[in-house]
Amino acid sequence: MWKPKLNPVTERRLRRFKSIKRSYYSFWILIGLYALSLISEVVSNEKPLVVRSDGEWRFPIFFFYPDDLFTDSGLYTRPDYKLIKQLPKFAESEENFMIFPLIPYGPYETISASSIELDDVVYVSVNRKQLVGSLNVDPEMKISRSNAGADFFAVESERDLRSRPVQNGLKFSSEFLSAIDARFANESELASLDEEITTLEGMAVKASLSAFSPRSRPPGSVRITLREEIGDSDPLKWVFRGDGTEPTNRDRFWGELDSEIKAKISASAARVGRERVDDQVFEWEGKTYSVRFDKEIVRFPFRPVGNHYLGLDSSGRDVLTRIVYGLRISLNFGLALVIGTMILGVVIGGLQGYKGGLFDLGGQRLIEIWESLPFLYIMIFMGSVFGRGFILLLIVYGVFNWISISYYIRGEFLKLRRQPFVEAAHCLGLPGWKIMSRHILPNSLVPIITFFPFYLVGAIFSLSALDYLGFGLPPPTPSWGELLSQAQEFRTAWWLVTYPTAILILVILLGVFIGEGVRAAFDPRVNSRFES
Image 1 (cartoon, one colour):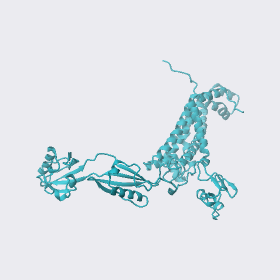
Image 2 (cartoon, rainbow, N blue to C red):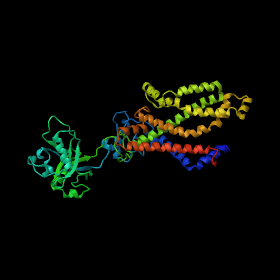
Image 3 (cartoon, helix red, strand yellow):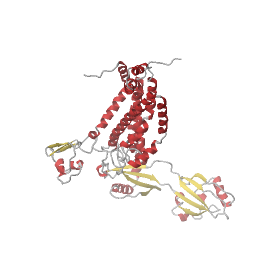
């Protein structure tokens, strides 16, 4: 088997890189991910890989076939293969069939909400309603007016509380009673006051007095607000499946309920999804409960379900498919940007370092002026004039990204241009471009090779950041940053932030591990140690 012949130094660096297992395995994992992204159409596509129809083989992922070819509809538009597969021609015949990719969804395909099958489950939440009421008392501490206060005194009607001493049902502290007397005195401003008390029936209640300011004449009554203390207990949750009349998670409270109340709740749960069902209220053992009915319906973005393993985005597109295609776009953008900017940086930095003098000094001043231009504003302006696109983003980003690598190459060329082997090439009469390309550049590749993985990671992250801000690739281009932007809009859609962030972190970590391995492989001081 043929193997390229490498010099001993390069072979030693390769062996050193392979010995760093984390970097070596990261390199092959990243290569595998990139190879997978290059065949995204074969891995994830709404078109079938192969169609066997009327005795002929067809390959829709490579060639276009009109709808009329499969349906005899007379339409020469793009066919919907998933609908065609349900026709009797394919559904009832073993000779006609389609083979779809592993992920049968395209990056721009919007999934119909009706095609997503959900379990017929109704969730019933039962909350204890807090009793709230108020009493107006006169200077003799008798109730002059009551609003929903009967429940706190265990009487049937609000009228039964008229002229009744408030102390007959509620026991206030001396501090609370003094605060009431101070309000009747109408002498000074008073702050609000809360007190926890217990009724004669054992109910825990919070009594409150609002803040008070002196008036032109003393008040005729003082209002006391009463709130039942029910704690922060979680609501009861029952789950009804299908047409079941009993919840699948029956508890003791359900078993103790009256059969009429249970029948009403079960009947309402059975109607959820077919018609609107309002919240209900029922009384049990002197306490009031509210019942809420919920049934999950498909609203985009939607959680992972069925064959949509990573969920759906705000437009009903499969997130896994968007991530796979976004991987290809990100890596292609990163590779094209880094290779292009490194070539440009090597040329400009090499000329500066080789020529030196006024050419180098003038070039540095021009680079400093160019570097001070605001990249983001230029990107926004160019995008508004020419429209956002892959090539425009690559060009605008590239004309700024070459500056950093040019500094390193300039330094290498400045260092090497006075070396003896370069002077010897001058004496032999070699032209300048040959001396730069054949003698100086091969000895200046260390910064290019060591910085390449880190520049690649930076380019991928920058593309995601621009897409997140809305200044990157135009919609509906698959992009990790665009998914993260949707996650900011839909805060409860955890899958839109979890999976794009995970793949972005994975690619960045792989690139960093590779970069660390390359840097260590090119470091001549591998076994050196500092000693004090």
